[in-house]
Length: 114
Length: 113
Image (cartoon, rainbow over all chains, first blue to last red; front, side, top):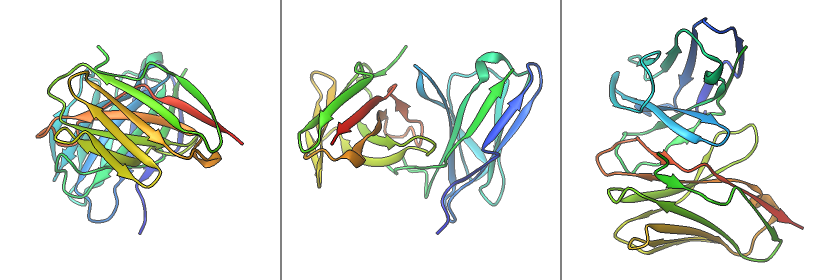
């Protein structure tokens, strides 16, 4: 059974550009969550989607957005990139999205903004 | 505001000894706690969890202890093995919060052979 797949693995963008990251969850999983990991901040929750609906959102500016498709694949978009957006972006999928379900993480996308 | 805190950024332990990783939280609404392990270039993997109705949960070499009054939890690894060397994240969530999980900043464990 394939794990959570994130593409691309590495990305370099220029300040002011926008970027789209993709996450394919484990087959049968309907919940996808996104996290930003930076040194000293740990993993910070961005948002969670379940059945194409955003159910939860973290404390990030509106430049960060996401969506989920009918096949549960999810994308997140960051517009007007800033240097501080350089981070490892992780997505996690879970089967039902129930609160006590442990999530399975992908390897992440390393975004560098220059 | 860091609601889940791991105050030790790193820990070194001899192989075969006990590793104790600590975590404190400030939000009394948290009622479910998890530990994740992360190797370099990989995503975090779930290790063990505990509900707030319990004070201990054990899974093989891993035991998590929860002290609700102190808002403190700890992960014990006995005996520690070199393969346990990784970054360990403590995390917490609120029932009904679905997958909104609040993570600590991580503790890098090094098990010395």
